[in-house]
Length: 192
Image 1 (cartoon, rainbow, N blue to C red):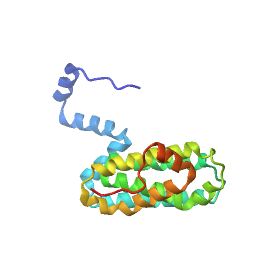
Image 2 (cartoon, one colour):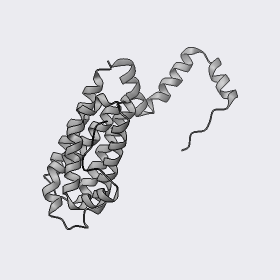
Image 3 (spheres, rainbow, N blue to C red):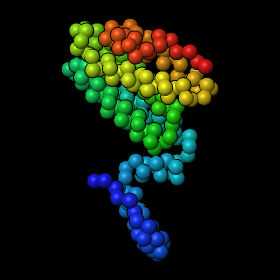
Image 4 (tube, one colour):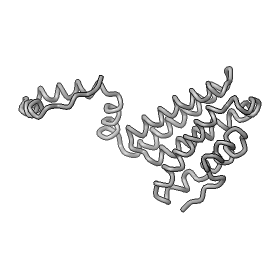
């Protein structure tokens, strides 16, 4: 349902409400938005150092999910579904914490872990079968590259090795290598 804009009259009436009534209303509204609740917990109750803890918990979720899924029936489509779901968790983490470095490092970790666990299985599949998977990986990699370049150069050391690992995987797997070449994805990433 689309959100309606509050009229100036309604805004003025809300401002005139007693504080305790406004607080109750505000708390009811906040409770309906999971991301907003998490943002408030992070900003008001947690210490900013918990950003690393939150990032690490997403990393552990990525590792656990991909490892568990590797024990079951494999198709590039199932892997891509898992990657999309895990990318959603990364996006949620970034919305809550505004962790721009984590956005890059977690995306790279997700891609690297997928290749580490699944490359042998991917290589056994015919050339055209993993096309959607390969396109998805290249889009995510291009996204991470753009975000990485916007970060201050002091942060580059934190992810340059993982980024190079992903670039190596991408350029050595025939399905992603072709799409990476078309998308002008570099073979090496140079820090500025």
